[in-house]
Amino acid sequence: MNEQDRVAAFLAEHDMQRPLAYRVLDLESEVGEIAKEVTTSTGYGARPNGAAVAPDEIGDALFALLAVADAAGVDAGEALDVAIEKYDRRVDESRDAGSN
Image 1: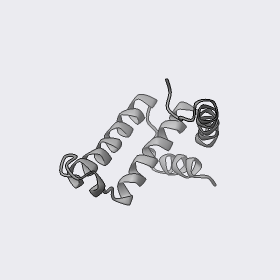
Image 2: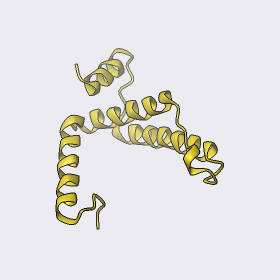
Image 3: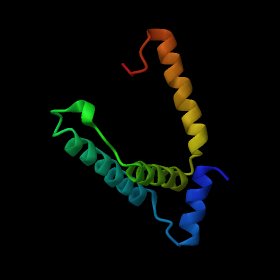
């Protein structure tokens, strides 16, 4: 069972399915918690090399993102494959993975 299936099974087992909009709001909250940890661990940016994030916060955000994918009917693995191909193409074409 892949990670997205594990999250979907957990949500179903605990009757926690929610509409996509709620899942996106939860994801925003979890990513905000990561940003807060980085903000405080760097002294509000004064010590960028001091950035730290607890593994459980990464796990919370990953769980929330996979729940978004499930609610949206998107296969997260396939979406990641498409994104990597896109970034690979950009690097090949312009030596930069960023969008223009």
